[in-house]
Length: 248
Image (cartoon, rainbow, N blue to C red; front, side, top):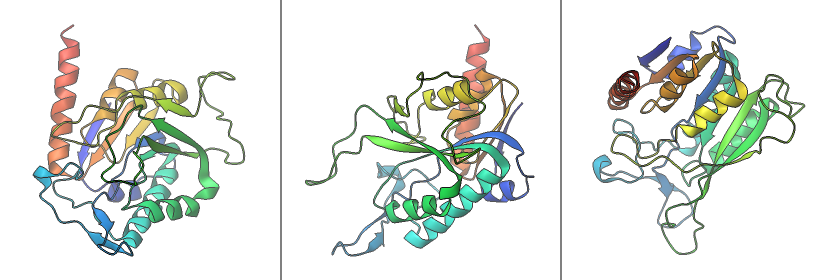
C-alpha cells in the first residue's frame, strides 16, 4: 500500500507507536537560505524570489531558520524518526546555513548513529566564489540497531560487497524540486536493507522519489509532505509514473 499525506510530518510521527516502520529514507530541508552576513561574523536570513532562486527548495517555506531553530528541528526530527522506525537513512548536505546545527544535532544523537555513507555526486556546480571548495558530496546518516557495531543484522549483502561511498549522479534539476535526490539512492537502500512487505516512511516526501522506489520494490509506504505544491507534484508524478509502467 502506498499512502501520500499532505500534513506536518512531526504531527504525524508523534502520533505513531514505537517502531511502527521497518525503515525510514528521507531528506529534510537543508536550511539553504540562512547565509553569512556582510561582515562574515554572523548569519542573516536571505529573502529572495523563490521563482528565480537556484537554491530555494520550498515555495511556501523560506528554508531559513536561525541556527538554533534548525538545530532544534533536526534534534526533534531525528528523535521521532528513530523512535518510529527500526532503521533510518537521512540524506543531508553540509551548507553554510546548517553546518554548526547539523553537527550539534548529530552529536546529540551520537549514541544512535550506526554508519555514515558518503554520497559522491561525481560532479558538481562551480562554487559561488573564489576560495570556496566545490561541494561534491552529501551525507547519508544511518541510525538504528546496535550502535556499538557497524554490522547490520538484517542486510542483503556479504562481506566486502558494499562500500560506504556511493557514487551516484544527482537527479536532473526540475521546476518542482531543484534539490531532489536520484531514485537510485532509495532503490539501493531498499535492495540492501529491506525485504518486500516491509514498511517504509519518508517524512519529507518532496516530489515523491521514495514513493516510486517503494512501489516497484514492493514495500508498504507512507510519504508525508507539508508543502502543498510539492504534495500535488508528488501525487501527479506517482500516478503518471505507475500508469505509464502499467501500460507495458
